Image (cartoon, helix red, strand yellow):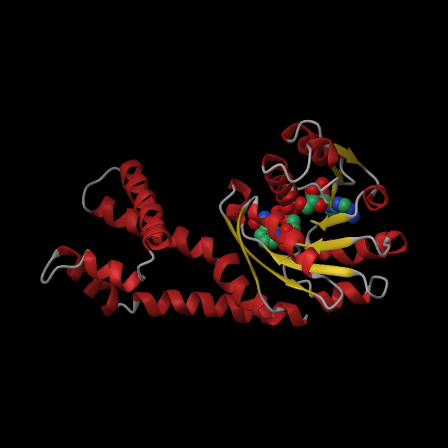
Length: 269
Ligand SMILES: NC(=O)c1ccc[n+]([C@@H]2O[C@H](COP(=O)([O-])OP(=O)(O)OC[C@H]3O[C@@H](n4cnc5c(N)ncnc54)[C@H](OP(=O)(O)O)[C@@H]3O)[C@@H](O)[C@H]2O)c1
């Protein structure tokens, strides 16, 4: 890729730009990000030496063929109205704004604009993201491959049909918060057993990371892996029974479903 543009030079834009440069998808000098606020521009330039910044959104469209729309959802309509006159056939626009549908984007842009909607999650900020993306009718297989490479530079990515992005939002978008809650609760259990809060948090965090890596690397199902640590009448079984008595896994499933439903509701407003 010769160049890569960002409208909005915030946290997500910085993470994606850094990922793409580190993965050699684009040189730092090929990155151009716009932001109306000087401090945001300075921070972006500081975190990605060699990248260029501007206060003019139109400059990003004039220089770059692939442009990531990385502003907050509530800023999107204003940004689209501003960039619309500068969008041409050569552009691929990639929106990472939560809840902003392809239909809403397309309605405010020239007909046949190639659009891709991405749902990233916060671990993208440290290169461990789980993202999903959906293409509009005008986007091509090469566009999909491009976005896949872009997202691969900050974690894993999966193509889905757009309606499934609500379920993705409930699972991987909101999911880090659910996992933080599990880590916090496990650490509290350790503290109740006499561990210091610091050691308990370290052990809980490393246990969550290790268990996730076991699922990812062994190819075994969570149920199989769980059976490997559960001996009859043992400690793990006592813990799993306590979880089951309190409907622990049903509660976590309900959290994902509630977040999904909220995403559907927000998409309608
Ligand atoms: N962070 C995440 O983990 C995450 C996860 C999923 C989806 N997303 C989506 O990613 C998008 C960006 O999130 P973020 O966390 O990176 O937000 P952020 O740090 O607030 O970045 C947004 C940037 O856009 C700038 N901006 C505001 N109005 C603008 C305009 N008219 N033209 C150009 N730039 C403008 C903001 O400037 P000021 O701050 O100076 O106002 C800010 O620097 C959001 O739509 C969010 O829904 C983020």
